[in-house]
Image (tube, rainbow, N blue to C red; front, side, top):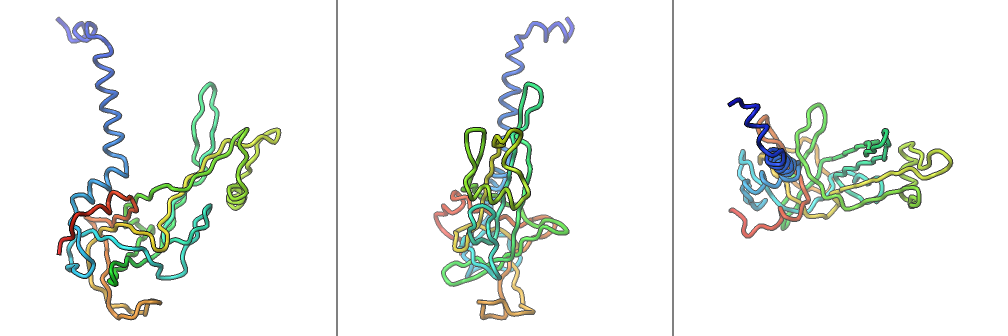
Length: 237
């Protein structure tokens, strides 16, 4: 009895359904948010005031700007980190899909403050990205044939040189999502604790040394404002 004969006798659903379930599970298990949440759940949580040098830890606190804050593209919120994506619905034959038009992420150095104690975080994208991140997408906008873009959305499209209308003056099918870490927002950051001597003074910070959360070849910084990461029962001292 050949393998081909054996497989031909097995109902196709018996093969396809488990493969489909495995595929869906893999999409969920390995998506960026779940990878970050699992990593943080296994990382020691410490108070900023008790950080130990060279230890990979996670800390919670409020984001404070070191320099002039960034401005989020659509919501115009002052922030230290934002990510945005703009997509357009494209038709191809009998099918259609969402094509990414703009995918932008900007960060800057920021403080994390907790009960009067501070650490500094310096996310870098160039030459090599030193962090992983997940930001909750809490601002969305869209337009379509019977859905006019808001004035704010239209202004954003103009800023990125994107026409809101297509042929015959109909609105293009566009969608936008934005996540930010606002000034004063609570978040979680994980990294390797290092005491640093400041070569140049930092505005609004009166000390010559500060703890910095850094990355290395094995561990990248992790930055997220997902609320589940803030649900700690107790802090390791």
